[in-house]
Length: 566
Image (cartoon, rainbow, N blue to C red; front, side, top):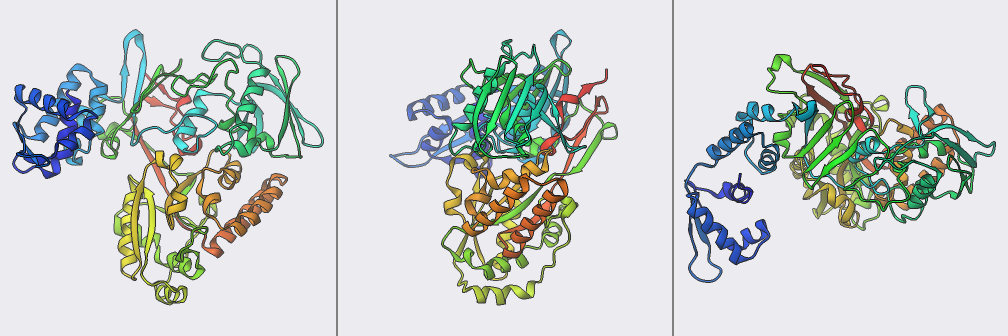
């Protein structure tokens, strides 16, 4: 498959009329990352192969024309069939990353499922393939803030201790035993002997010391708050290590159980494309669009970046299964979607009456019906168990807008650029227009989440928050992680009040922490700092040969327990 040819056809498809389109050479320079001279050379090569006819524009800056020899849909279907016959997974995955009409993918779905899903590879390897709808961001434990990447790190690395959600307690892991002094300042861990990194080096206390130092030194990172209070690390032999805090913190063991504290080898410079840890999976291959993990039980797990349409037809199936053979698992996600108001931006959004108007404007049940979602769970809390129906009264919107002094200025709404993020943002724009509220939409990617200054440009951000298995640590991290938007966009007085509550939170037992979480959520609702939307329902389909399918942290599948029944 010629990737350049198909990327060009996908880009120009919407402007095609009877297999012909106009274009500028600069478009292909940017698409193919090459000079104008090379663009012309490539087009002439396509001509020689009978793919198209290239008609250059007359004069500098004028548009050129392309006359394609074949219908694009038939070419796509032919390439997919050819890839299936030859077993070319990478080529197929590249094709499925292109903006191809969903209907074409659906027609080829049986062929796609035949090539993806489970495969029995060479040397009797069991290989499972999955699709993700975007490029991976960072797999660096220090900086990771996106749920799927955090989930992957849990399989690549190990922590000193693990959190048991069922009993709400900390269990030994890399440390076979641990003890805490009466002041809750000295945390001593006794390491298991014989633990090996993927590099076959032995794990010792020096690796723990190095990992802690790495987090402490990462100023402004997603994890640095976890190490703020660490005073020193004492290595009392190769298998005994003590972490000393400046101030008492009974909640500190929960910090250590976080994937941010995955122990990395001190002797190696961290490289997230050659991730060296001690977890059950190791990275075999990673590119911008593909990730291959390997482990003993399920020999290899391959992830391919494709479009949402392609990902929707292939979950974790083994082969070209009939619909009545496929099983599914469904669960309410341990998180929520929300519209976050920027209390630090000098705009109308600072007016409480305007935020109250937004609260009544955004009726999630009306939205779900309009968009045909079928199923949703309304949110009024961070977690489904505390959520309840919220009263929305549209007759209050106009009086509140008048009270706020809103005069029709554009509200800068930033949203993720795929899936329900796009749907929801477009619905909000339509709904706002009915009441004279002008939303200006700005899509952003997960990469932008790390690299851009969205918090300085947005009035409101449409985004989500997902919890790990430790919902209390996740709640704490939501307000302490400098990468997340709560701390960036909540008003300073609210952040200061929440910080005081969270200091009490660390010292409380389960009921006490739950009570503090409810107080913080009530504060957020009262001031309309964010507008709660819904708790997503996660559904995965599987062939019945795939066994022990369970949901793990961040509502993702637990890959460590999957196995194939032959």
